[in-house]
Length: 84
Image (cartoon, rainbow, N blue to C red; front, side, top):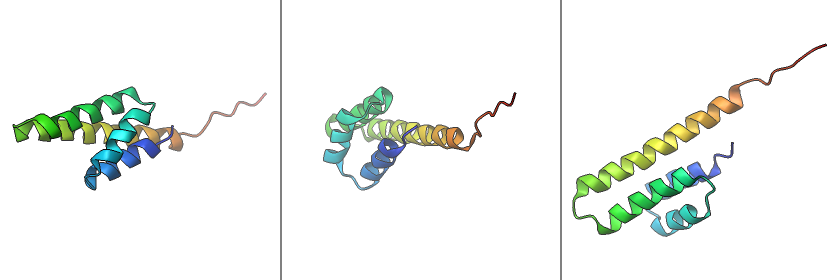
C-alpha cells in the first residue's frame, strides 16, 4: 500500500494548503480519500456553521489515520513461507 497520498493530505491539511489538497483530491486513486477531501473543502468554503466544517475536517483526519494504520499493519506482517 502506498501511503504517500495520505501523508500529503495530512501535510496539506495542517499547512492549510487548500490548492494542493484540491489537486491531490483529483489525482489520488483512493476514491474515499478523494470524497473526504471534497466534503471538507466544500464545507470550508461554503458552510457558515463552523461545527460542520469541524465535523468534515475530523472525518478526513480520522480516515487518513485509519488508512495509515492499515498501511503499517500490511508492512509489518511477515509473508508466509511454504516449504516442501
